[in-house]
Image (cartoon, rainbow, N blue to C red; front, side, top):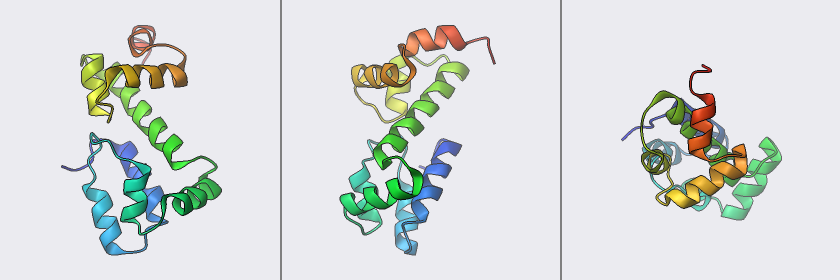
Length: 126
């Protein structure tokens, strides 16, 4: 499958600056957003160690790749909460969190409320 979100285009664009080979770029395009993508996976595809990849990413973008990926997933989750009637479990799985409880805890850590509360408060404000 191809990417399901334009946000992933941003993610891939940022990683391209660290991936000089065509093979790396092709592999990154094949990554599916719904899979549990790890920083190790991306670093490996780029031919870098996780620690070196993390260092140069943080130096360039002032945040860790993991933080960036979590934010990317949560941004996609907010889009789905606003624009669909998918259940929280379906949204969780669609943004790479097979465990709904883990997703809800991460979401609350970033937005200060549960996904259900966020949906209720933000629906109709578009």
